[in-house]
Structure formats: C-alpha cells, structure tokens
Image (cartoon, rainbow, N blue to C red):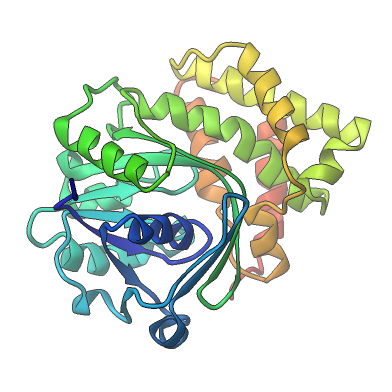
Length: 313
C-alpha cells in the first residue's frame, strides 16, 4: 500500500540526499530543495554509494527555491543549524497547508527555530546515527549506520505520547529501508547522541584527527571516554537518566566504525562555520540552567569557539 504523504527535503547533502534517495527509491512522494547542486541534479539525478548497495535516481523532484515547491505533509530539515536563519522563509512555503516539520539536525533544542515558524504542535525532532558524506554534486557516499530516532519536541523535555502521524511517518521511513524508531522522549535521545557528537566532533577539530586516529591513541581515547562520561553526567543533571553501559556502547561503536571524518571536522577543513552552538553550546547552557557545570566541556566549548572565529564560507 503506497503512502499518500508528501515529503520535502530541505538540504540534499550527506543526510538529506541519502535518506531522501532511499525514500524516492521506495516510491514515496519526495521533493528536494537544492542550491548549488540544482543544475547537476536536474540533469543527472542523485547518485548514492552505500555499504548497503549503490543506486542511481536519474530523475527526482528538484527545486531551486522553496517558493517553487509544493506544500508538503512533512518537511524534513536536513541543513546544518548554521543555516537556520533560512528556515522562516522555507517553512512558510513548504508547510503552508498545515504540514509538520521533522528536524533532523545535530545538537540540543535545535527545533526551536522551526517552532518559531509553525508552533510547537507541528514540530518533531530526530537524531540520525549515520556516517555519510557528500562527495560531489548530487553524489552521496553512505559509509555506515543509518538509524533515525524521532519524536515530539517540547522545550521542557517532557515525555510525549507517540501520535498516529508520527507512527505513519515511522512506517514510511521503514518502508524505505531506513531503520526508524518513534520515541516518546526525544530530549533523552538527543543527549544520547550528544554523548558521541560532543567528544568526537569536538576532539576531531581540536586534535585535527579522524575518529580512528582518536581511538587509536591511548591518551585521546581516554579523553574521549572522559568527555562521554561528562556528557552523561550533564544529561543526568538535566533530568535524563542514561545507563552507564551506554558509555561503553559509544566507545565500542566508535571502535567498530569505518574510519570517518566528523561533520564538524569537514566543515572546519573547508572553512565553513561549525555547529559549535547547537552541539556544545546549547547542552552546556542547559546544564548551567540546571545548576551544573563541567570544566572539561566548558574548555572544549571555548576551544571550538576559538577555532570557529574565522569560519565564514
């Protein structure tokens, strides 16, 4: 049975290009917003190289501007948080008939910009446990993993019941061979993702090292584990209980991971603004709001802020 829901993909890069490509291949109604890649994708389509099997989509619904896009039932935000100032105009177009927004961005409380446009009842957030890179115009290289955990967003972090629409989106994603899971505690899942993102995005820039290089030296491996524990402690201070075994899982998953450059390190090397505030600043401020502090996380944030000072491309 085919889904009647339409999807807008905002950001056809490593994340949006990969997931959107899988959705098109599964027969879902998908519309892509592109910028610099528009002409190439319009002419050549999307190419996905994946550990699960390569495929090519010769024709996709591609648009140069949000104003040209149809109103969609679900708008998936897959741009970097550093470009969120664009969301007001984009979402005004793609959600104009009452559609919902699914924010698939790294960090904590990154849904707030979408909430400001469409209101809290129409915003979902999700974490992608994905290793993927955009390697050329309309060309995505999926390296490893791919799970999405998503649910209702509330700024107070409260547990939310899983709505029928959320279950329907989950079913659509699963139909596209995406390991998707609807959850009732989005903020807890975000903290769990931060237990990887903060140490390995942050250290990859500060140490100028890939995940494999970090894990292959005893000093940096120990530092990564210490930061993971600091993030878990911050989550606990903010009211989200995460089992200590999850620390070992993060370390084991990273050891098993195909050597990978984090998104923050790629942005740093290319001179682009890094997602320092979303990934490190927001969690740190949330911890401080709950009366806590973390010297190691504060130092990492200060270092990344320094490295980010001239990233303007």
